[in-house]
Image 1 (cartoon, rainbow over the protein chains, first blue to last red):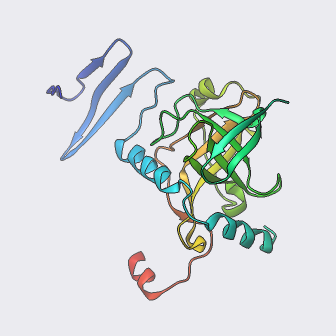
Image 2: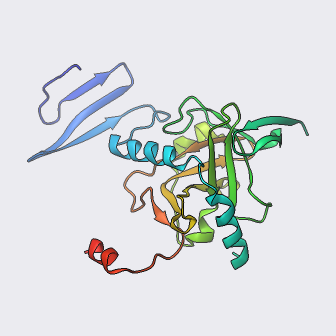
Image 3: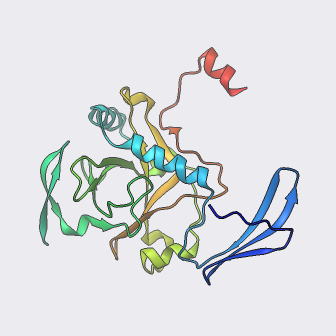
Length: 77
Length: 157
């Protein structure tokens, strides 16, 4: 991993299109401003990991689907 | 209408109308390499449940729900850059919104992932899983009312 030291309002460039700027520093919290091409998703890593984990858990493995469908159609939802 | 065959570990060999095959250009988190999915009703067109089955992975089968049936207040804002993936729509009503269900051994504990809905543009047959930044939603919202036990109440404090 490349490690760069930056001060407030200083920027890192990744390629030509991505700019990351230190916008605010407060205690152990850093606010970063990110400029990237619109089609490039920018996400906090823990969110992405949570969704990845949930998708893996969601792969159908039990007979629960049939029971679920039966229950909901019975209720007329 | 062209029909294609899909191999499913769970459902066996099924015939799918090609119109139901949706391309996810980036895959979905956890399955970045599976980009083509058939999305079709579990029972009939009226039902709130759909299978989302990878076209070339017999093991990859998810169950989706129409969120508004279970969560009438569910709302999301889709940043316009996603339209570059989905293709142009005249109005947001032209997009189909689903949420992924996680169905554990006991189906009464089924949860919906409201944090990352599946958005499909039926006109271009393209889709994506959109992770909503800065939302109050999580990956596990129970779709049925949960019994209020003491231990649950304690956890809520």
